[in-house]
Amino acid sequence: MELNLRKIAFQRRLEVLDMVYNHKSGHIGGSMSCMDTLVALYYKVMDVDKIHRGDPDRDRFILSKGHCAEAYYTVLADKGFFPKEELDTFTVFKTHLAEHPTYKIPGVEVATGALGHGLPIGVGMAIGLKKQYPNASVYVLMGDGEQAEGSIWEAYMAAAKYKLDNLVCIIDRNKLQISGGTEEVMPLENFEDKLEAFGFHVIKCPGNDGEAMAEALTTRVPGKPLAIIAETIKGYGSPVMEDKAPWHHAIPTAEQYEEIKRDLMKAVEEA
Ligand SMILES: Cc1ncc(C[n+]2csc(CCOP(=O)(O)OP(=O)(O)O)c2C)c(N)n1
Ligand SMILES: [Mg+2]
Image 1 (cartoon, rainbow, N blue to C red):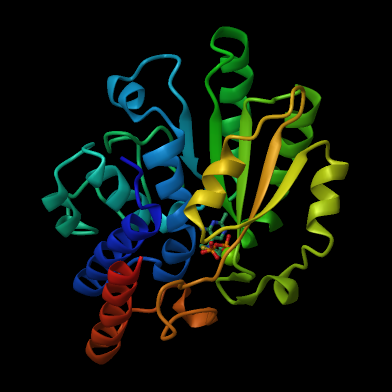
Image 2 (cartoon, helix red, strand yellow; image 1 turned 135 degrees about the horizontal axis):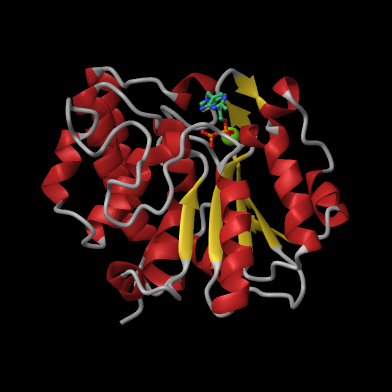
């Protein structure tokens, strides 16, 4: 049966909303923007059974923008890595489900949250896998604000040098970071050209379209790493949050919670 990726993504967004609202923490804007990428990867692109078994030739996923952990947790729970009830322990004392992911959580390969680290680790994984298990891929999901970290550009250089055609970089291009627009804080102008100059095959993709993302994520060009610029809207799913910088980590009021919930439920129905 063909999966409805859009519906699944909005169902997960509803879970994110509850986690953030009930526990008064998290990063709702970036979680909403990257959800379609996560859903495309975990419901269509990656062989999740292999990840469950921990097979050495499994695909690897790294959430380099680790602050969007709650989006990741809803997908991992729905895919059976841990019981769904655990989502309700988000950021509670002694939970594994902290505000940033750690390797203590089943399914998580790398602890992230300090921006700029996921890609260098992913490059190392891709070098190792290329030698032993060339059919396995490494997927690294980054933020566009995260591109201001110098370590990302060192890793881009290494990815091209080692011809890592098993590495897929996804940049959640929502044009906002923590304190405002990316083009004000640290411009990425000509981003596509820059990535191409660094030796990447680059695809620009509507990042809130799970099917389009799935197609982009399965593209491979021999000898070249792949970069997908996922053009998204931060806070996607409700006009209350969409494209507004404070929603990087704002907590909805009771009224906002109800309004966002209505918008997301409508989106689930219409998907
Ligand atoms: C090394 C480091 N510096 C600063 C931060 C604080 N921080 C958390 S999220 C964020 C903005 C990230 O923006 P972006 O990568 O665009 O994420 P998104 O818009 O997808 O949420 C910053 C600066 C951090 N987590 N790590
Ligand atoms: Mg951003």
